[in-house]
Image 1 (cartoon, rainbow, N blue to C red):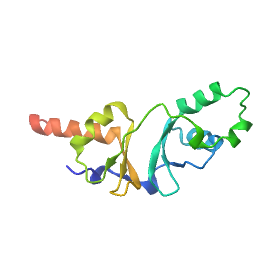
Image 2 (cartoon, rainbow, N blue to C red):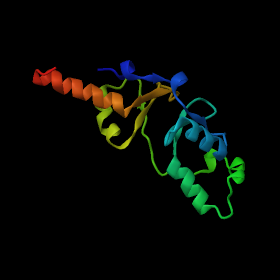
Image 3 (cartoon, rainbow, N blue to C red):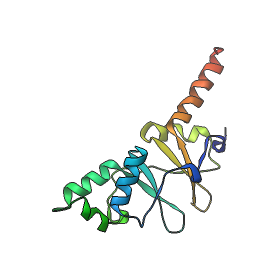
Length: 139
């Protein structure tokens, strides 16, 4: 089954531009209570995912960094420890299962690698549960 049915479009996704500050990321993640958000470059292309852990490691490894100091650190300067692999919109659900094992969400891009949304792990699991139940004859 094509993944477009499960897509949460970009306009409904919390994401951050690479040119925002560490403080902006901390505040947005706290407000939405997310532990990871997609990053988008100046051309709208998916540029990776920033996690709480990435921000914490940056604070730990930057001597003298205060919360106020996070206003001077751009997200593009922060190392990312996790790679959320994106898929193309033309992918099938079968392509997502292995990614969902290690990613809370799967970023979706078009053929030009422009970020168009995400598919959450929850939707992938629900799809496979329904498929399994349908194949076993249960409801």
